[in-house]
Length: 251
Length: 279
Ligand SMILES: Nc1ncnc2c1ncn2[C@@H]1O[C@H](COP(=O)(O)OP(=O)(O)O)[C@@H](O)[C@H]1O
Ligand SMILES: [Mg+2]
Image (tube, rainbow over all chains, first blue to last red; front, side, top):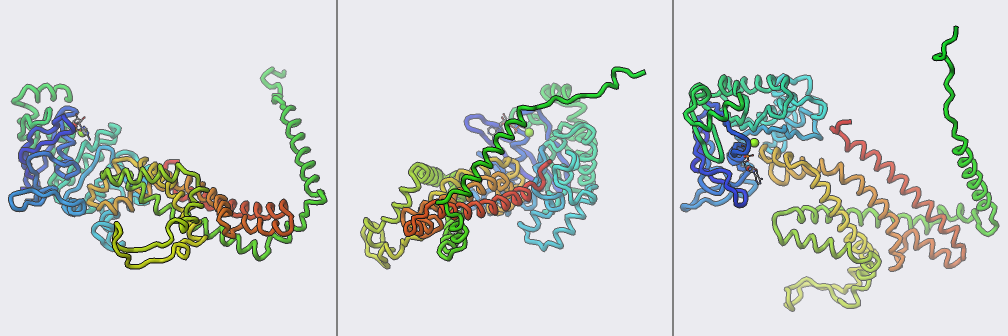
């Protein structure tokens, strides 16, 4: 099992945003998280990577507890460096790309292998060029993010995440900040990854992508999982009224 | 047949601008003539003292003070800025208190304070606190010389201003950058060094260059503790020959030369820093 979340709770101040989320994802599975804005999708995704501290329950990735060490029947919070090390196998792609604006495309992709994995410059560069080629941007290696379109930036961001050789990829609305004609190129790259067997959790409003590519669709609302199942079941024949209302709005 | 569309265009003229420019040029010429021919001004002395040995030594001291005080200020200021942005309330308020104290008192007072420290604390020692035995101790006046007093006064004061500059620079970096770095499993230190600080630098460099230029001239304040930098040296010389204005011109010329060099460096740096910014 790649990801196992049990009864995950998270509050911001007095507001409980995640109210006991259970989710398991198998290796090679592609799962999409659907739900109205503010339902807690981003927060849950960030918890999987320990960018947010959870207040209850637990999450494991690859059988390892996220953010904590289990000892003597207690969970001890990890130091920032230990948390950083534990994240190596999880890649994340953000809605607003978050590329490093002061570095070129190829430097963006090289950064983590160079400074986290301490690879040699030559090896990191070769890998980065290969990855840029794979997302169709071999000719943009020397461009700064500001010189790239949104779709190109997001593809560089995917290459950057892949450079750490993750076994799990998290996508938080990767196409929501893009002009409509640029959405396709990013989804193509993601489809390619799915076809190669990458385990993926994708928060998206692209129902077509969810139907075509995902093995499972999870519908969240107000901090709980309302229903989950194969796309044809949840998307064409939802069993909850809330899911139906949501789908009517986005379709 | 000639149509009205082919009639020539006459631009608006600005006779007032020309008159104003002529008046200003005239006044400048009068002033330069007055200065150049003033019998007591002794421009020959300016030329004579420009490369005089003690002036040169003073110039070197001024440069040393500027560089060392700015280094102390920049390093300590960055540490203070990171402390102020930390989650630890003790670190935050210590850094806040430092800035409050050193920005809130005159730098002249701070310089004199360090210089006269020996009068109230005759011995500096390393030992156990609260009256425990001393392990090593030195007479304060041998530790805090004129030069160390000057560096303490200028550097510790500068740190307070640099802390604010660095803090504003770090605060301007989008929070998504830290997140992206964390998600790439960079440690906090690598995140600062490779992601946050380089981007903050674009906002930090211009005001820091300004601070360096003002530090260059601020060093002349060490006059009050008698350290022979550029201004003090000029003052020592005119104390003997009573040629105040020529020697002040000598000092000013050197300050202008150094400021010009610093300005060129500043422009170069700012050009380099704008990498990746949409033009
Ligand atoms: N850092 C934060 N501080 C306070 N509230 C937050 C924070 N992040 C998210 N929230 C709140 O948590 C709720 C869920 O947000 P989010 O997970 O971003 O939802 P979604 O991604 O499904 O749109 C929202 O009500 C949002 O306002
Ligand atoms: Mg969201």
